[in-house]
Amino acid sequence: MQPLIVILGPTATGKTDVGIRLAERWNGEIISADSSAVYRGLDIGSAKPTPEEQQRVRFHL
Image (cartoon, rainbow, N blue to C red; front, top):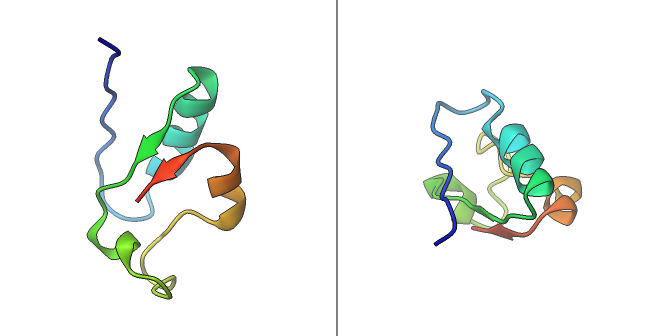
């Protein structure tokens, strides 16, 4: 079984950056459980990953 790393914290504290770095290092993927990230067009105030960040590793929102 592969290890599961959980990153928790309030909005805009760098969780996405840490997740991307870990996923790149260990060829992982990111599963986001942020309730505001699932809405299309709700980009302001949600700290949703940018299109550039989403190109770096696979995201599951």
